[in-house]
Image: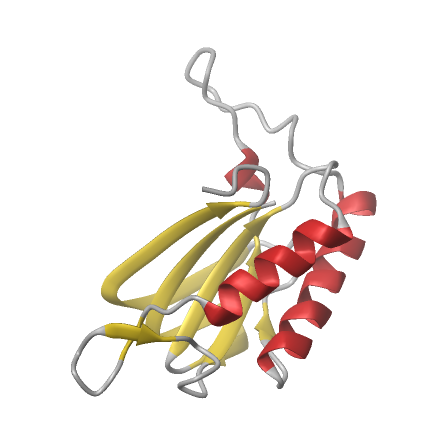
Length: 150
């Protein structure tokens, strides 16, 4: 699973002109799921997301996690994160899981993030045409691939 984590002052998801979810200070997490993602990938990524120290402490040093500041998380599925641009100019999405495999993984990720954060998270809607708005704080944007743990 690949995720793009953005520290936000606020973020929201709108579908068909209606706001589905919104958060204030916290993390917008875009997640791209592939067939080889496992329960272990979900647990590892959730722990990393919730405990990533990218929020400022009282000395303006990024030393606090979203959990420590009582922040929120908005999780949005985004199959295009699995794009391959190796050949030609049209991305290939062959690595992205089909809905029947990806939806259960996405739902497990929601549950794991809620467990690790200790509260409900907000979400997009799997497979929907979503309009995602955000005010990136910093900006701080981090990409993590559970298959390449650097």
